[in-house]
Image (cartoon, rainbow, N blue to C red; front, side):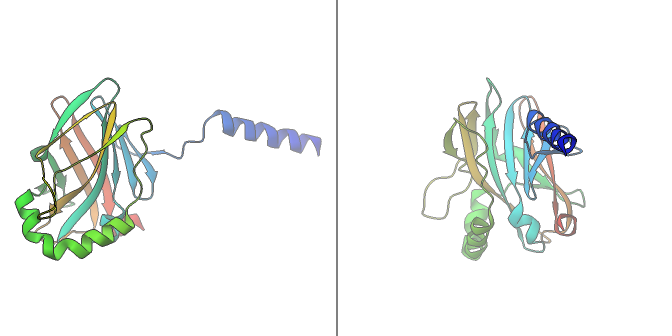
Length: 197
């Protein structure tokens, strides 16, 4: 009995001292899985958390919606430009982030999709001690301004939703979010549909 208690205590202490992180490494360097539909990227210029829950559960729709939180890596500040964000489809096609004009034109039909995505979204506030800000690539018609760039540093973390118009609808398979920065190219693969089950 005493040996069993000592063994259990040793196992417990080993678990505590090795850490309790629930992050799981992926086959992509710098990318780890924080949950079923949340991925974290850590690189030399930025750190980002990507939420894909709504996208993963809704193949077939005409718009891909992704949630993003991004901050500068230690000591880094960087500008992320709209035209440097894209997704790569399972077929290998690259689709740029939608323009504000495309978003505005589609907005009447997108409102219910946006509402459902907001309900399904995972919290992405994994960065403590940093001031929150908004990624304002998109604005609902008549409800503010949109910008073609967001500036981040290691003192602030910006949150926002990314919209991609997908001509033939969102297909099941392995997708990838790409962000090209001045000194690095971020690639965050994520599954949609069958691979998520």
